[in-house]
Image (cartoon, rainbow over all chains, first blue to last red; front, side, top):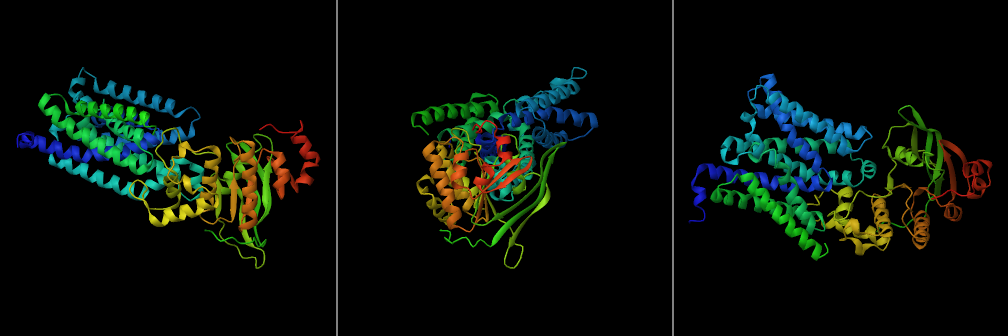
Length: 270
Length: 248
């Protein structure tokens, strides 16, 4: 079949597999990020990848993916802690810490005029993914799914009203921290393939689009996963034929879906 | 439906020397209360008197000193206290895709609401919504409910784990006069027909006078407690509500 000629190449097969794992994961995690109004939080997390790499370089770590993930987890927990204690708004706290960490990362990585070495992470390249790395993605998908099945109700309860959740013996702090750590991990394991600049779009757009036309959590999740996978696969194929970077192609399709659902939702008063 | 039973009047909740200090500020001190099942207890006081803090301390949401006991008066046996809480509001903005079912099941069940509807939990939710004639709200989005509708849903939710004590935090904000009257009547019915005690933070002294069995005047510590008539006639009451009536 001519339509599937792109699948003849191994790198396209791997990319296809990776997309099939990343996009549903981003779809359902995104619903909670959107409903909890954490878009800025996940954006800041993405940007902290630069600092994570910088920390790895300074410490002489060979695999900067690990220093990136560790830094992101610490960063996420720290943000959670501080924004629950400091009285200024969460946005401001995130912004202060995010810009501070990006500046630090950029300063270290650009020392000696070497930043171009790291610029590939800004855009990402899913075509370079290896089978082992796909394995890592699959593991994180499994972990996230387990948390979703066993923890989603509690997380939703905490999001709706912390005190009420407390009265049902649900610990708000624990649920929020697990969710933040999980978000940090999925962003970090995918950032090399999607790119710092647009990873947040992939997390937010499908879920927000689904929110435009959903009335309950089941519809919300169904559409978020559907939109995410659809724009992922379509973006990959189109990027192959048009010869543009895959990440941006995916995000463009996700944006189109967002605007279409926004329009549809308004017309049908959802 | 939950069984309608006459309150036995034999259970009592004792709050002993409860105190809350946040940072260096002492917000509540030495609160001792005796609450009987089947009684409606209204907590009144000016803004910042610590009324909401009292509720959160009883719920265990903030650390406090002192203790809370739930006793059977006949044999003195201590039992586990189940608390139903009705918050002032929920964090839902316009367009949030959370239905009444999603919200109630999230607190009540382990069947993941993003995946499927549990038959049993759905039935259970419907039965409790029925108490407040709110079954028709099951599939509505929480963000689209009116103030009164949300109130009834939250009340149904609070009753779902058969509480011994119902805590209501300033629930009447954003309701019109008819809604208020209906609300107080509902609470009155609840405490008459279910074996539970009610602690209600209230701003409206007229309704307190009409419906409360016991009034607690709070200002960091308990200034005065007793029947509405006693408290309203006291000098402490006049001191707190100097201008005759607290504003809303």
